[in-house]
Image 1 (cartoon, rainbow, N blue to C red):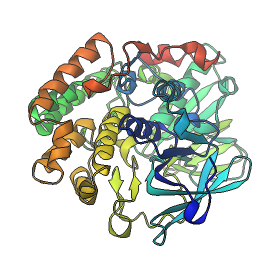
Image 2 (cartoon, rainbow, N blue to C red):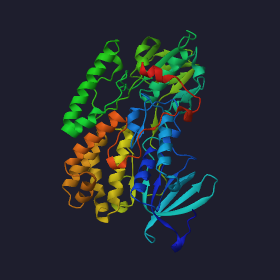
Image 3 (cartoon, one colour):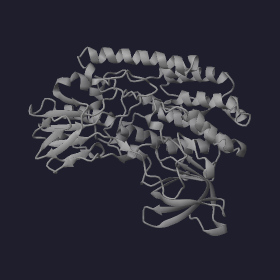
Image 4 (tube, one colour):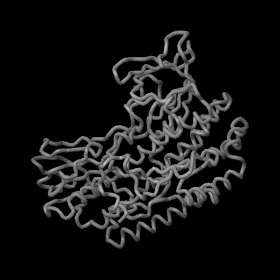
Length: 491
């Protein structure tokens, strides 16, 4: 598709930037609602976004069932990044989204043209050529996390330092002294894999785990908080959060306490509204004696193969420093206007109201299921975008979903949207068409239980089931690389 300049240029209804989970789900819902003049642009050669860049051994922080929407199913208890990537590819294939997707298309700049009444985007192709695209609405689905975070460390280079996104050679950790830095999911996975590589091997192998700020992780197969969906439908967010918080804190106290590892938990109690609950990693508790954990500190210097921590501790003869320090926010395309007014899954205010949208900037740090939340929001979004009157009221949905800095899950967002729309005469008809008054709770509850228990699939809109039992457990798709971490995580 070549876009001409001037008055003859084709103007698309919308351009979605980003071919990750959010972009693909947003595109699928737009196609379902019969939007045809639109494109999804992905700068990489294939879909996947962050999931295509993180190492395939990285475990996901949600239960696999949370990713199985609209008929996709899985029997695995643990998923890795490669499984999510497989889901994205299959989802796009089943939804027949290929005609609307352009990979190797990088949006390097753009601006709103008052004269033409559209966005003028500067696109660079993989081959180096340039193209101009025009669209009425610009939807940025570049996600929350994209760029590996490499903290500044005073080092003389005597110890190799590798970010988790670049490390795959576990055999290099055998019989070695390895320092893992970080308290999140990446650091947890690094530690699990290092322990496995060193198991029954050279006893000289050591693992030091440097944790500046401890995070919550289950340490067992207590993986899901799916009952929260049912509880929220029946009792609302306040009661369900109280019940789930009590259950998770009791579980953490027993799980860590019986191994004498209460010090591994953050000093405060777990709260779903503030904290993310990382599942699994039971092998870390079972092999705690093989881990030398340094909590509440960071790395001061690295000199002559010795790592000095901020509390003065010195770790000698270090062979490898692995950074499980996560990912930073993405770099947005230049020239698309200020993003200062944008917030959670949002619509821009001021000069870009109704024409510039940011989706998922905060999503991956919520406690909810990311695909299900994208699915809920995308259906509401594209339904309202059709109506110019509704479009002017979209910023109100921002206020509903961002009035608290605390975490939100899919049911929080639905409850906020329905509550807001009930008091707004413009939004009420469109929202009620998706969430019929009161009956949507009963219908959603029944459908959720039916599909979750019978088909192991999360479905929030009964008329959006693509098919039954579309399995995502085709391991042949992922190639021969298997880390064996699955058995460790199951404990």
